[in-house]
Image (cartoon, rainbow, N blue to C red; front, top):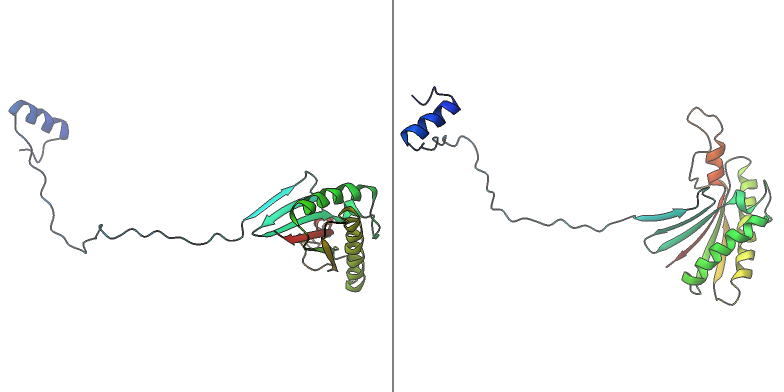
Length: 190
């Protein structure tokens, strides 16, 4: 009688007769039985490559920290006129910003000053220009940080290690990408 009854009809019959339903039969096991009492394992692994990056709106100055490495990146277009290695008037304020960080955190260690160019021009010319720019930044920082015990190691890399494409996917020039590649990186260990 109850097998063909709908759920509301079954409830009505149960309520009026006072009967209690019996649980449905449990089907026989046909497959593997799962053991839900196994121990729970905590998976732990070191966190790698977390990068804290802060940049001003035009990205002419970027401060990044990855692990115990600190890197201050200054756009070469702010530091130098086109094809030049003499610092511009704007360069001083950006390098003063970098010097404040170095004074507080580099604590008498050696700081790397790495110059980079975009891919326009020959490799030899770009290597020379990037080194001259790294040396120019070093001279300003040495002046700003005299007496702190901080030393500098300037290096030129030319167009190596681009941070953006120099050309678009279709092969056309990418001026915005090239601008990001023209930079000076000031790096030290915390």
